[in-house]
Image (cartoon, rainbow, N blue to C red; front, top):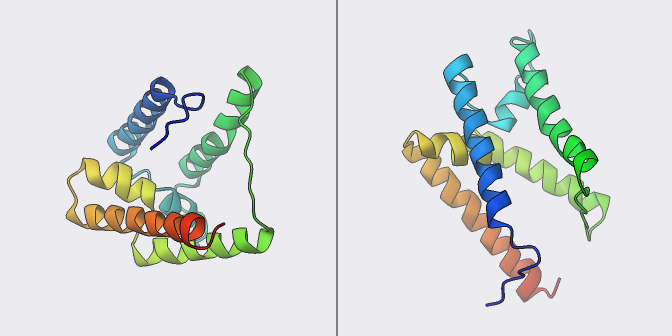
Length: 144
């Protein structure tokens, strides 16, 4: 096994995880809501739209934080080695998966596990296993 020490950032990763945990705790304690991105975004798609203010603020922070971080330091460089068709198909499949699982990785993995939810544990193990299998197939079996 090989560790890329240039991109190994345990301090920043810990800080990011603490901030995500703090944000999830504040949202549940102050608003009684779970910080699941699919549920927050999905709540904007249903009529009548309730709680639109906090949902838009949460999503603005989700999109705006990397922009502000890029202004303050070196912007993150993202290399995507696939076409738009694959990206759209992957997004569609993730959307279907979140509907079947009644939530996404943030809702189940961050909030559900911290509450001791068995359903969230099963969902998170399933998400992770699907990711592991996808990487195995994509990188090691098909040579991608």
